[in-house]
Image (cartoon, rainbow, N blue to C red; front, side, top):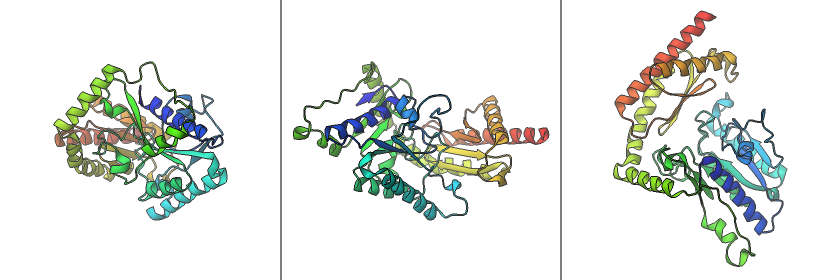
Length: 346
């Protein structure tokens, strides 16, 4: 299905899962498991599934059918190894399914990595082990690749190619047209379609569409965009330059206020804190630091995405080494300027 953007793509995926279970007579199998720090859109349903920017304080988006599990951020589990963190997270997922009842859980909605949460990279084996639990309980595994799809991690799609897990449904948007015109979409596995086809259809029809779904101009732009990806070998370029991007960004770790640098492909996050020893206790001074870094970076010619105390970077897929050098130099100068200003004020 083609939609108008990321939010409508994810919303359509969730509605399809609900439709599929209704067609099969599983009226109670409507629960959705999502993660703290995840982001999936701004429709009523996708906002309710978003653990960071769902707007719960300002909108009535809570739903008893939506179950939140912990953010897969290893930094939230100080003192534990990555393997121990993975065990804890997988056990929490299993317990959530068992507590709610496998017959009530329809889908697990996840990003390959949590982009809007601050480029949170799950521990090794996380996706694979949770997918196995989903398969055992007929839970649809939905990969929200609105950010990671179309080259951001050097592949057309990340969950299967980078993390080794084949989702049941994948949603996409941003990179499909490189953002020039609005277009989103989702791909559904043959297995799910077989459940509601032929003798299983019972006269059902998945009625779904938006006013500008699959707009011809947007589709033409997407085809041209994909042709450029192939003609100019952009996926190969991302895979080639990503290690340099990571190495350069990690040089910022020597700054006293930088507590973590995370990268995957051409997506990165520099996390800063006024009091680095305060672990996860992010406060107003830390958020103020992030705001200052954002402002000073912009003044110096670099746009970063400020997420509280985190600076998220999502550079163009055609970026060069010289441009990476310039980007990191500007960010270093902005961090130093912001930290010095806060220190003087204190």
